[in-house]
Length: 565
Image 1 (cartoon, helix red, strand yellow):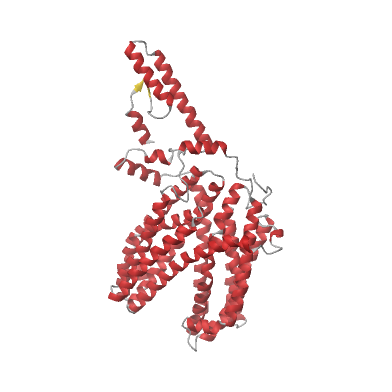
Image 2: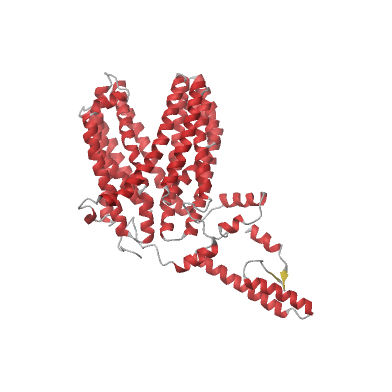
């Protein structure tokens, strides 16, 4: 607004009013009329009348655009970028960043329950670890190895949720609820097939697999006993990814969060009862974990059917292969993304372990903090995957761009908050996790390196969500693969020349910097996942669009309108 006032102040007056050059053809005609009147020495009454007409035309045009949702309250993005450069532009950006925005309500509505759901699982896992620890070091070692095997086997299938969310959100935005039901059904069929296959494969090869992951003769029996019970819930674990992705696509993260509370309550109740009450040991821990997963998945499936998000007729027969191929191709591409990130973090962990016990302990502490902040950033990414595709489905590209822009600002501000937290509580955080002076010193050295790049990490996670929302999975996976390859090169140099823990964190930060460079450059280009539409083009687009968001209440009722709106 300040920039607009400054531009108006620099323009010449037309009979008591200011004309904004280039705003409309009427303004130019008014200016020519004033010059002509002055040249002939005539009275300026006619020019004043033209200026008033020009002003009313501009006001009516602006009102039409605001009513259609084409221009935001502060002007379009093109207008903002065409303003004065330099310090004034940065000041406007900063004011806009910290000022409350109407979009913030939608972001909080999606992100806050997502934060709770993402933070709940690791907290309950800590409680489970404490209970298993009472069985002895061999039991906790075996369960830890089994969990690593399970996570490595099924993390690559997180595309079931990541690809489902934007697809469902776009179909929801277009009012194509029947297609959304079929999309959910296909994901559930893939979950069932992959899960049953995993039960057969891991059930037969449990012992050699856990030994490959480092279980010795003493630990292996505990690892095998736990894994063979937990693997029975593999189809339900994969189906829960699809269910949670579907609810996120329907703009509902509250229901998965509440079901996660119920499932983890079951887990915490059964853990001591089965482990110590019935004396089942690690088998009881596996049964409790599987029961918790069954509670979550079956509860979400029941709610989807009751709310008619999922129609039973779409589950009766398996879909044909050609209908599953798009999701499978997306899964293959996103598996490259997942493998690139996991392998880089694993290589960094192995490199830190080679440097010695102190370096390994310090890296593990800092890595856990890094992972905690990543989970919080992931909630903003979930908001991007949920909010942006709905606007894209309604072809409201300007609104989608405004949402993505605000999410980037929120991600950056959250990163700045983490930066201040790590910088101000550097030594205090280090003393919480260790009493060894050498480990504390190493942690205190690494935390500032982490802190400096946290704002960049916030942008990375939001951009990741924007590319998922725009379904540009190929470019997303390629950018992350290249960034991870560069980080691998840095870690290899660190390993060869023994450069220390600081070099390891610089390599990981290099991956994040390259990701924000690759993803950000395309985001601001003509091939952006969230299209940049000029204001006049978007006005025509909004005027001709007939798609509307279908009325529904996914918290208190069922979906009553199906088909295109």
